[in-house]
Length: 582
Image (tube, rainbow, N blue to C red; front, top):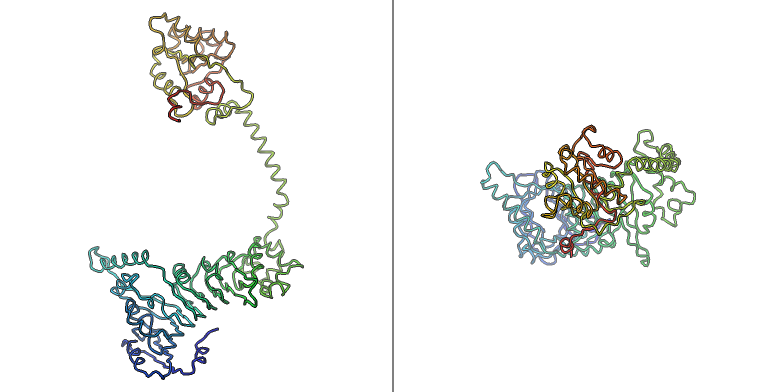
């Protein structure tokens, strides 16, 4: 581990300066910088230790450059003017001599003007301000607190509110336009960002993407309220080739199964990296995760001191550890004793097994008895369910076979077997419509529109006497010709129909045609309920022997279309529609 003592020993000419500040008077880092700039070349290097005990105030601009400053420790101080030198190119003339710096519980105060200046700088910030000390061995930022100015939002036109909007716009502009930063920390061994609530996915992403860490050994993110292992840290070997210890203790991580170990088998004597996940919120370990851990040759994942829930989901994990030929936790030559601790993991929940070793639990104690019983009886239950499902399906199909056949044809364009195909394509009309003139509104506005101009499916060609009868010919001849030249006759049956002699004639003609063709030529559409005593004898016989459709039936149009169709797959017939598709 790299500590200040280790580095002190490496620097033979080091002068340690302790500066305790307790008063409310602001101490200026510029004073120290001016003093060191006047030292002769043969002077000692300096280790500056500033302590404030939460009361002292210091002016300390980032990146804290001063001649001969090797070590800087700031403990519990109120820091002001933190961004004052972000665009000051003159600090580049001061050598980057810092090798160790550590902030402990600092409180960084930001002013409104400072915020505006910082975010408006954008890409104008100096390289030193963007990267900070690039030659350090130890980078420590522990438990940083930022204090921002308060704003009064009582009036939308207040000066403070306008300034706040300026800050927001500046921040958005900076976020979108800032170019890629390339910082190289060629000496950095330890990066300590522990005990901080300010760190998040974006902070880690910027750190990894914008810097290179060829020598980093320790990365400390403990006690930072991390909820999951950051995506970039799952590929940790790509960004930190020599990392030995990733500290993620005391967070709220629940899962770790996607950690990747890029093991270079050709590299000799490679050290084993440790990802420390102790004291998180990991409640279960899957067998898949266990297998993944087994194949991590140069990686150890430490999950001790987590609230393991010993439930049935842990059964595969327990069974694997109990195997006598398990070379994962028993044989040191395979895992190097890295995972012997798994055999001593204890349960946190449920209460009846709390504190017991997971390895000592039976399936029953893991709560798997009911699940195992279900697995054993599963095939029988599944077969019974399939038989019941088949029987229910068969019953429903037999009970509603007519409706199913009709809907399969009209809605899905599916022709079920055992239905004969009609061949009447030579007929001029699909149907002649026999109706009373008092029902003409329904026939023209509803029946004709639905059959001749459907929203989908093929249209039918109807023969309507007010539109298609030959002018000058006798009515009887027109009726005979229309019935003969139509595949079907639709009888719009109502009380008005029964009171019309011409309608009765149309019925008898269509009935006669049915007898001649020996097929279901006649289709009766019952427009209203009519008592049998009001009907003609032949009409009664037809209603008893032929299928009719009632206008109030919710499948009225499906049944009517099915009766009119030739039982072939329905396609659009008129040339205009075909032309549209082409």
